[in-house]
Length: 402
Image (cartoon, rainbow, N blue to C red):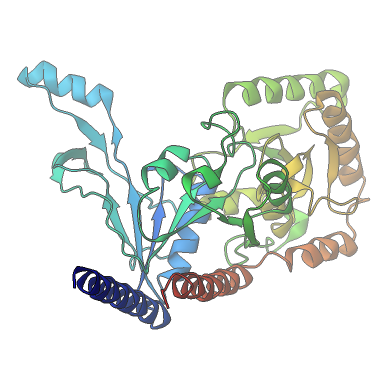
């Protein structure tokens, strides 16, 4: 008798489990799920954060989308508040992504935490905001950037499908112990933004399921000036990797002037901290852009420059291997300062002599840029979610008991 009762209980449990799975599958098929993104709370322009938020923006047109972030502690303001009140008050920076050039209004931004937090708002006032623990359902999908293994570990027990959004090969192994992989955190799915990143993942973590997406260059923002002949004989540059990059760039500029005294009048101008529209407008004024990112996972600046009719003189990093060609820039070996200086001189002489006033050059740029469109990026992220929906339903149905 006891065995019969036990058997009946097992059968009820199996039915209940199968019913729950059916309910989750139905919600997935009916698009009644939420797409979650973990995002570092950067309030200054960032290429990686910009791509993440643009993908979130695309998906918010069809699905519920949440962006989760951890407020960044503002130590200076916290200390100032303590000096005034003699009470310990933690103050955090607000997450303000107003530097992007697309719509975020349909996205819910949620601060991670378990208690009220004090933030400094855009008006410089300290205000309280509610934070909340991460909340996900079995039918949901969650994207985690490649450089946050701590978030992967913290979410190892959640019930939703987790996916790595890989935008840099350089940060994939950073933060993980030797021998660890994303599989150790229960993650086997990746969206990669470049061939180089895909190659790196396949080499270091064989067995991952990788889907590729091509980033789009917004041609409504990055476009040719009305009169290409009014380009200025100046070189734009950025220093995205801190003090070491600044040191190298400084040496390149000084060496260029030393070995090309007749070109000392050529100006080098750093473009940084600008909103997207302003950045694009400034970039279109320059004849050349000097590209000095040695560890980019993809590198959009060269493509943005080509879209603006601005010629590229730059290093050839691993992440740019899918688009660097002989006909779309003056490319030096990665990190090679002497070759960069030499190519800057060659490029400027060609431009000043009129050798680069050839329509075919911009035509070659356009042929390449046709592979990297915002519409293509949007179409692909929708395709990827559709694929994950199918894969997730198969995965859940295979877990049902007979």
